[in-house]
Image (cartoon, rainbow, N blue to C red; front, side):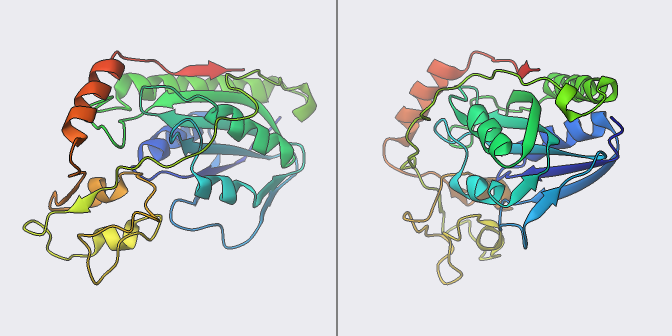
Length: 261
């Protein structure tokens, strides 16, 4: 197969998923077209067909599932027996059913998922876990994964000649639920620059009070913490420090990416 166009659809609140899928796409090689669905659904349906296009989908793992907004965006992406790669990025605990969820969604939308990978990024709620990841080793593994994908595509006479990998996960998927830990702002540090307001994927922060968070909307993705230029936003809840210490102790042992072909 001669793939010339690589479409990359990703939800990436803290930019770790974006880093991984970009590395994979670069290693495959071709004309890369990005569709960032973190802050908004695609403006229109995306349909990929023909012998020269492929799709890479990347999403983070929130409590064992992909974000609801990512799932909604994927419903708008369709293939015509188009080769696809499924990627999830998780915070070093486990990816549970997320990778299988992406693969099932893609295959149900007319894609042929011939490769899948679970990679690691810094945990969005307990950032001491997998701190600094994806690191150089992770990026090397992402590039190697992309090169393997490129070789499989080059060797295949057509999409039907590609494999159909078994990935880890369970059906039915685990029940999706929110983590009740929402960041807020420190009023002494906040300058009301509105960066968090503009970039919050859930629209949970208002211009009138950027230090507050609408907990009914917040998805605990951690973007406001990452993008705040003044270090104002964090999780200040009672008991958070104890929860962070326990989680960090339980899940700090380094996990490595897993790939499936």
